[in-house]
Length: 271
Image 1 (cartoon, rainbow, N blue to C red):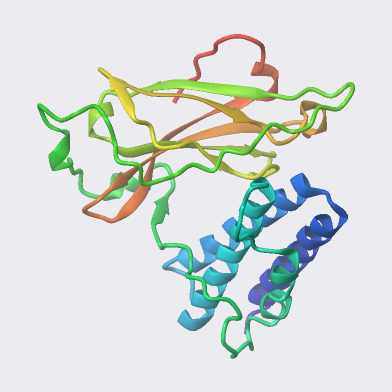
Image 2 (image 1 turned 90 degrees about the vertical axis):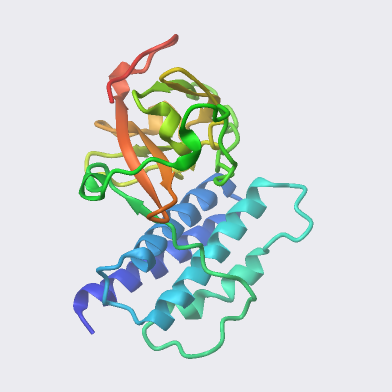
């Protein structure tokens, strides 16, 4: 087994321990942050068609592990959850992520791996044949089925002397707006190396369009006080839509804001 794979597993285990420690200490925002970032890292590995570092059975186990991370994250965000995934349940998974390369027992919980919907980076979709959905022609209704529920997080507690940031995404202008199925925007905060500094959030699927605009009108609460963001950090907006014939979600375009661009009032940013 390559040194790269061993280091990856060690990194995952350290992140898992960090998240459960935050969780047990009552630092829920930090725990959610760590769980969601780890879940996305694991999912990326599982969904990579070029990855031969793990067997198919190991990938299935990792997919279930990522599902449990998301379940615990959701439980921390919803105080009214009746069947919440408890911290003691999550801690049962530590031996799995620590020894995934040799683990050969049944998964302790009856969960399914996160659905394998491929997510393409900007530009990758140019290699695919262009296609139009049959339901977007003349006479179609200006609405989209709700395929992606959204993963927006609540506002952080206020702290004296620290600034919270709420972004309202009004709309996006595209010449082929009517042809986009299940459109949504992924919002992330990254450092200069492209590392996520916050939990990545997805808006709900847009349900209204006007001419060449897709309307979102949704608030996104940035999950870190502005003063705690490192120099060079930026907020990214990735516009994604579903391609039924390819059965994948594609990143069509993206935009970003640097910290010095943040100011009260409306702003238009380049795609």
